[in-house]
Length: 453
Image (tube, rainbow, N blue to C red):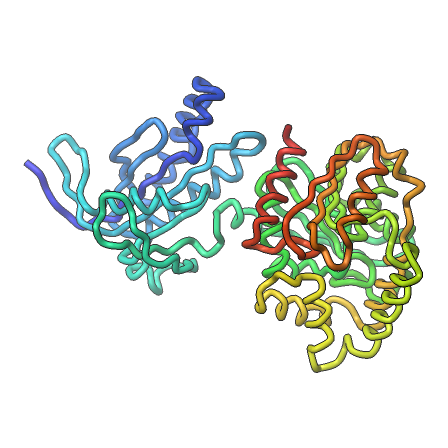
């Protein structure tokens, strides 16, 4: 005898299961069993879910309410993201559907409700939560989560297209890494510096770079994806340079001061050994720090970095830099966003209109026009070429091939001066890869391979 009823079905499987089993069959199976026992089953029970089927790489669960099914899915993903750190983490893909199911006498469950949940789960990205249109409709006004419409999907063995929605945060690993804690410390000269900690795992320190604001960057369509991806496998430490963001504004700017600020933040954070990420002029600051504290820097990673700034590379580049600084003093603080949008477009020529406009809008809040000009001139005069040969930390240098503000040959020269450095050219013209472009994915992959090999 069979029974029918309307239910919410949660379907999940382990992303990359076959490859993980090929590498370590016994270890992978043991880890999955432990996570099922310690995380999945208790979480399902907490949200009134019933585990109805398990397979080697996944499971099905039934809920009376899509609300509890989605809350359970998010809780499971968050716990797994926090628990599974390091190489080859176990990552689930989860789909939730509201539909009719058929229950056999032996407890087995099948039917359209199950089939749709399984197909949606197969579409989800690792650590993602996708839901059907029926589940999404039921959730309206009942849960404090946003879902992005992923449109109609044609899936195997279902004739009609299935409209799907994805948890707006992209992946729950990203959601975990989006919780940041902001603190303050004092540099030796009394300047107050704002720093933040986010993510989970071994430490990774990002040296301050051009124009930062810990809170605005956290919400920015330009930076958010980068910090989220780094926070998946690392505890990320960032800070606003003096004169920027949440740090003190009326300050003295110099390379020595920037290096001292990095020393202050690292000591305040209490991290003893760590990889150091330098973006743009942050590369020169990182090199100076690494030579002062070689025992603390395990790896160096540079993106769009340079050893010799444009003010000292050639007379033509110096004149262009000074002209831009003069325009900053005139146009940066103006109500008309034209100059800031022009400047943002040069940094991110391949970004979307929304990304450029949002970044341009944030720039005025990050720094004043006068300090933007001073910062631009000081950072443009950095020259650490004489220090490169003494760098001993393993170094990865990444650069976008069409970077308009820091040409690729500058990154290549940086890499060639550091013994054993690896140089990787990324596709695109942006100074820093933005969400959705191939360079962003490649950057994330290269960094993970470099840190976890």
